[in-house]
Image (cartoon, rainbow, N blue to C red; front, side, top):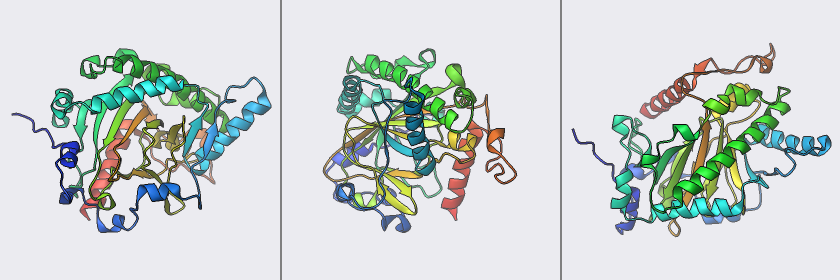
Length: 353
């Protein structure tokens, strides 16, 4: 049986259509909150996503170091998302990663199709678009490229783009440095919970087992951006997610009952706390609901790296130190795979009502 390659959103976008197909139109209750992303980004009133300076995260001076840890703790507790600056990853490397991804997505679609994934056969790595796998049959205005980027011995380089030639070198180096940054962040978050500094990292698989999966999201121009979403509202299942983007706004966070648009902060990496850390901390740290808007004028690209525990090897549940009589466990024990299944089941239940 030949698998059917789903239609690419990029083909739709470049076909000159004036109105988007029905399956991309969001349900009525969502439409009221979708505005013009460029106007939204200009707003300065109201809450703003915090910017955290990591320069002192490993300072030898305990007072200086603790001040940085406290800023990080506050952002993780209150928002669960932040712009990281002075993160230690060279800007020229970040530019190389972004350039490589842009060059790949600028290739003709038939070239990109050589890297197509096959979701039906369980091959999730590669070039793809969302299939209507939920009860409402709803689609998102994006194409993507998904692949495991770390540890190096678990990668499948055969599906990585060969063009541009710098793709593998830049992406591999970035993944290695991001893995080191994840250790620093998890250490600081552990200490702020009163735990041993290596504890959270150990609980999400440690050096051997934590996986870094990169998803390059490509959001083509959309003729009716007020009706669509690039990515629908969700929380990340990961422990941490690190995001680069091409300085086109689109990310919105659901904070205190309202959608807040993230500003484009130069030389920053956006970091989300994912469900995995929310569960381990018994919701001391938040995994925030977020979504991606699209626009008429500019293509938006983001590079999300999800730091994930192994699917079956670890039971995720609130750490015993995080549970008291006054604060009982908010989550039942599940493997990471079971957590993903549970989220999908709940989502499909909600959609079929």
